[in-house]
Length: 54
Image (cartoon, rainbow, N blue to C red; front, side, top):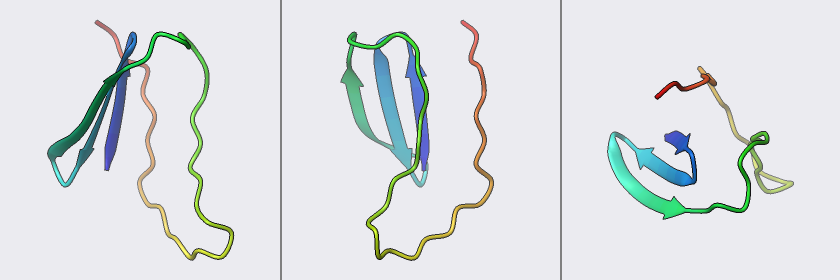
């Protein structure tokens, strides 16, 4: 899974295929978090965050 934000453009890929593209100009800076159901069992590997340049 991959998420990318550039300006107000948000894009998500799953297994290399783009599955979501949206525009949202309400927020221009912030943070991200991973959220799952309270009783879910999950494992995340290789989580990376990069500052993107134009």
